[in-house]
Amino acid sequence: MTDFLWHSTPLIAALIFVLGSCVGSFINVVAFRLPIMSQLDTDTSRFNLAYPSSHCPSCAQAIKPWQNLPIVGYLWLRGRSRCCNQPIGIQYALTELITGAVSVGVLVYLMGVAGPLVNNSPAFLTLLCSTLGLFWWLIAILTISRQHPANVSPVWQSLLWLGLLANLDGQYRPLPEVVGLAFFAFVVGNLAQTWVSHGQDRVKLLTHGVAAGLAWFGTTFLLPLAGLALSVGAARLRSRVGGYVGNETSGGRQLQIGQSAVATAMVLSWFFSI
Image (cartoon, rainbow, N blue to C red; front, side, top):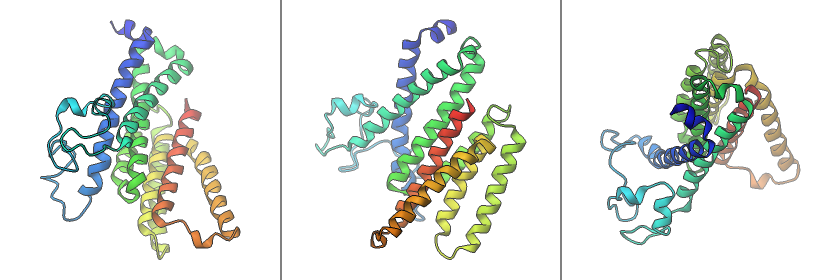
């Protein structure tokens, strides 16, 4: 049965798409609830990722399970809530669709570049699961960062631990290397927070992102990160020289750009590591 699944690419791709779209639906939940949970006055025993059940944000009525199906539910409801006929943001369906499509893309790419591993199902499954975990976490980070760029720290931290787990057997880089570099990033980041008078929270959050990248890919992560950092810095310098100082990018926007650059560097590092 296992051999049949791995050698039936359309079937396994369909299953991966369904799984990815379900993960995308959960990412929507995380993106909506995590910023609320981060507020100091939120009782997380009464409001968390699992409780209460999904409800309409307009009229607070419970959403039926079949109305909450990824992508299908949005199409069936024609983009409007059944209870109060209020429009449902298309970004929810897009997140589910993008996550499913990226999951299939990862599968197809790995089957192309890691062909010999396909016949070794446990090894290929390990590689596939770690890669899907990486891309799902990055999609979650970018989704949350789009609206609440300062509330992504817990997701970056969990991605760091996931990277260390992926490298327990040296899948991408030797474990001592990634542990040492991640620790070094935290030390430098904590020192940097004492040097800057403004934006300590921004430095802290970017430190978590860089440490997560180092925990996954070690030294392989440094070159893409440096290249993207130089590109972002050059773009900001051009805007200043061009006389757009009055349109200075907001702190939230700068933080979103920085996190996007770190996420992009991690994706490029993954391509270099496969």
